[in-house]
Amino acid sequence: MFKWFLTGNRIATNSVMVKKEWLQVVGGFDENLRSNEDWDLWLRIAYRGCGFRHVPKILARVRIHKNKIQRERFKMAESGLEVFKKVAKYADKNILNEINFKKEEAYHYLLVGKALLEMGQGEKAREILKKSVENDINVLNSCYFLGSYFIPPVIFNSLGWFYRKMMGRIY
Image 1 (cartoon, rainbow, N blue to C red):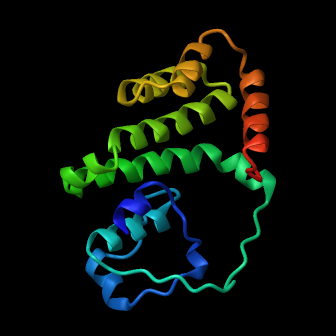
Image 2 (image 1 turned 30 degrees about the vertical axis):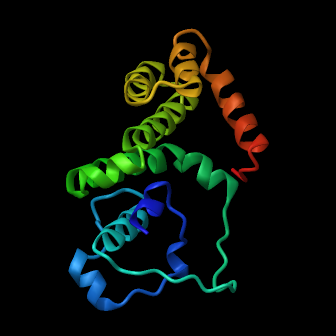
Image 3 (image 1 turned 45 degrees about the vertical axis):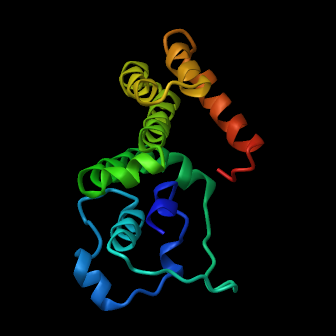
């Protein structure tokens, strides 16, 4: 389960039941995180060996408000990267190598860089995007890194919206 959770936060918090003992073992939610505290918790619980079960019924509904997600994109991306850095400190390096941790980490740097570009913070975005390219050079992060030098922020904002729309993302 731990490796599966490393590829993204796949569970809505309001749809989970956890035994109190597991929360005590891992120390509960990390209140220092600005976001993604649930993903951090699932990772720590899974790493310790807690099993997860899927119930094939809709048990909870999540309302996603477009404007709220747009405003919080940077916060979500930044805290996702922070969760990844935490994992790198405690997880077995062999497990991290199995899932190509550097590539996954590069993706989180890319998300932060994209959010910064959409906010018009090109210089900060370049610093972050450079780390993405250093971890895993690929077409997407390379284009964002190079484009951050000469493409106006409003274009990145539009391209970001278009990309999410084409990929079927609702935000």
